[in-house]
Image 1 (cartoon, rainbow, N blue to C red):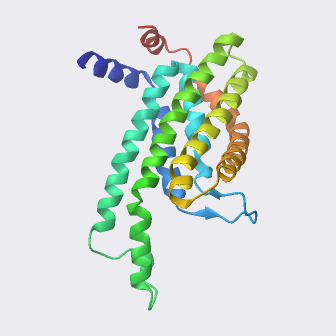
Image 2: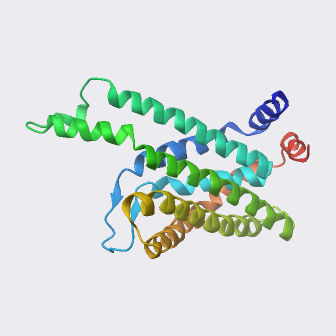
Image 3: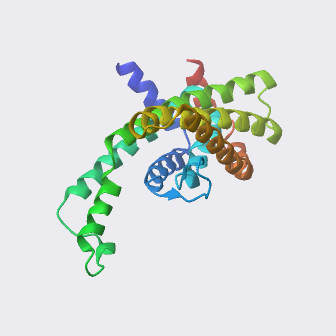
Length: 238
């Protein structure tokens, strides 16, 4: 166990702080934003505002995988997930502390609004559980698929290679994330049909991929500045 913890510690210390910070920021932020649904005007398309940051979580994974390898990238992802759960606990404690949120001061509606804000930050256990499992599974899929594609095409430093690795792995992993969450939460607790689960998972993955395509040049520039990382590479091979 000590050896495992030591290896994990070395992996995290080899990762640039910006990559770890973006990973944590994206997962904490997207879970909060997921509390607001998006009115798409299309009855079969269910989206939430978490999509505004979900692309950053996967772009961070792609940069980490490109620079440090899939095992280190997965450790970063799971560490970000663990820190998010710590923040979930903090938000829950804040929601049960007696007091009044600043935005609840609306004459005649203070109690209703304050309770709604408490519930928003306090979270729902099955949604937190479903999103955590979905993120963990999709992180493994994204990181090892991204790395596998790189091994097949030669792991060159060109933007074309980075884009190919990122676009394919992001689409597959985003679909995995969406369908896993839909099956655990939407189908079990809200009675969605399989068609609804698959349709929303697929359309959500396409939209999230578009974000990745738009922002991938930024991820490519970051990865270029971070490569090579010999210490991280040696950990991957250890």
